[in-house]
Length: 189
Image (cartoon, rainbow, N blue to C red):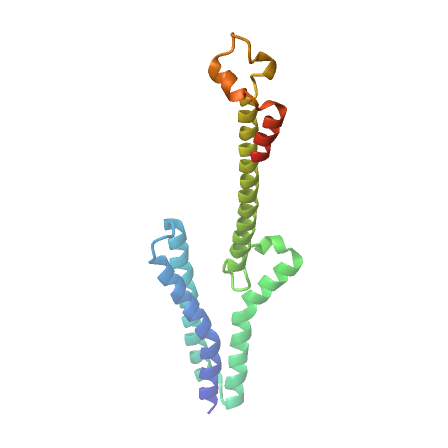
């Protein structure tokens, strides 16, 4: 009965590290990561898995040799859980002392996915703002070009209609438009 509880408690607690170590090793085989990252994933996962399996092995051998009752088995299981959680407690202490020491990681040492999601949403917001500014600038530029064309069309003044130095085409375009004609063109813009 005591051994069943011991195995259940230790396995449930250590299984998390075995699964995480296996995932890290499988990430090392995936393309899309640099060689340096793949090596880090492989050795980190290998180390985590081996340490966890060694802990399970050593605690089983130790309890087989020392434990004489079910209570001692359960107490030893709790001690093993505490020892394997020591690194996480140290990490929490570091976070309390100075958060910059562990910036970008969570309590299990993995990079936070939320921070990259926050950065993505901030970038999307900035991009939307830039797109709106570009659209406003494009509208203003089109209006300025339209006004420039209107001013160009009005460059031949009514007093110059009879002037032979101004070509007929230019005089014909301006004829009859005057100041009111410019206002109509500007309203079109």
